Length: 194
Image (cartoon, rainbow, N blue to C red; front, top):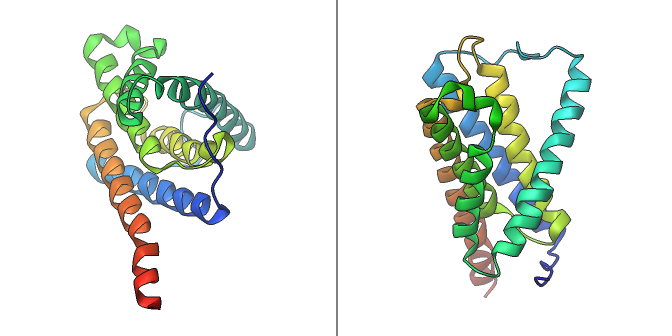
């Protein structure tokens, strides 16, 4: 069994959670700009009361993250770098969403790339122990799901479009920049104390 991920301070979890929220806001903002739509709440796709929808979404996202990020990512890191494992797992995760298969190969591949970029976003920002990593992972995954649901038109799944790929690239970029800014911050503070 792979070695356990080491726990980190609460401040680091808070920081990674803030970066996750900013990255998701960028994703939703870019989607809104590119589609010309404003998020609608509750999303048009909700057939249940909003609270039930949100609880089910959060539970489903957590279960997926435990499996993909918690098990696949952790075991895969024994054989490859975290980014490689994340890219492969994210692509496979996206390609196995059977609900999109009826749309054809291109929409499935497009969604797989979007899921891969989401996976890389999560891996870029998460830190700490298993459960500490689940917090920003769930923020990103749930935010992406809710953002897509709130902006999708009923005639085309937004998640299978190049628009979603572009928004996911922006999300990953924001995560990389956020991680770089926050990882350099303690060094700047240490220099200013001298």
